[in-house]
Length: 416
Image 1 (tube, rainbow, N blue to C red):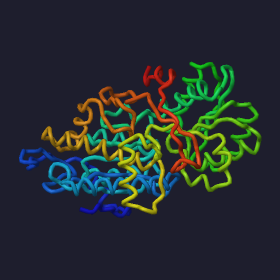
Image 2 (image 1 turned 90 degrees about the horizontal axis):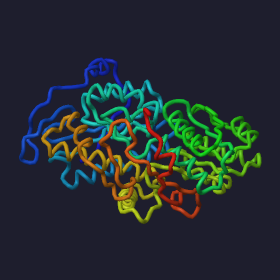
Image 3 (image 1 turned 60 degrees about the vertical axis):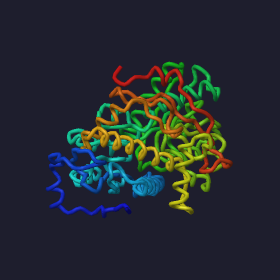
Image 4 (image 1 turned 90 degrees about the vertical axis):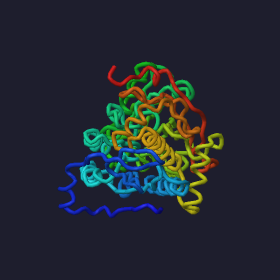
């Protein structure tokens, strides 16, 4: 069964009707057993949602994720679906606008059993409280630490603060950043950047470093002023929590100013298209990526290889990147939750949330670190991340160096 991609235009009347996003559960057949169903589930189908960024700062990577997501659920449906039902994906574009994300959620909620993704920190922060009220599962929310407080959220790997703390540990332990030096932290305003700053500041205190913080917005595309401030402060390294445009600008300007220092970007900062820009040489010299999900070029992970093969069959000429295994594993996490809900006889939004929380340690065949634990609401499911170096020799531009869990990442805790 092919997926629907609904038009993003919403009528005012539909918004009014969507204000109440829950319906009474009903009992229906599934696999020969009685299964209680609710929003987004019929006798023959399951509808899930994806609120992503197809027109904002993360559009290139989001488009890759949509392609992989649709291919994943097509394959699931070809194999018999979930609970004897075909899965349909409702994809909507928020353009990295929190208010638009809220509007889209309210329109979708009565018709979906779960949201596989709400891409981005500020957009997911706006949607999560509403989804929690409705008991709706939300995955793939951009790794903001604030999302961990919601029982209905399943973060795909380590949070931004854990990534940033690991970045600082890696600078000290592997990149020879000495104790007593200063490091820059350039970060988007909002939950994404704020969470990364918190992790970096914690690690800096633990490792005897000073932080030179530079706050920007997603509209800040020329980082000349920030790079100049960091160069003047003689920073020994930079943690970046922004988007690919900002990485290219920062690396290029720092290089032009003679600042030969490592730049470690968080999950969404690198895109392989950057290697076709004037900043390519600077990126190849000094740019690293700290990600919760494995990069595309990981031959040792069966899960990553399955993700890549699926994407290649769906989009032979499509752009590739770490977003391919990310979309695959987001779908895999939700699939496991849906299957658990079916097995427990409760295929309602609340049943999906209960299934992933009660599922024990999660195995993703190397796409995410081993031993993910979702039993404790409020804490990152892991402190382990993947560290990669920007490289022309690696497919999709990131060469996997290691999996790391540094001492500062392990000592960081939300809420104390």
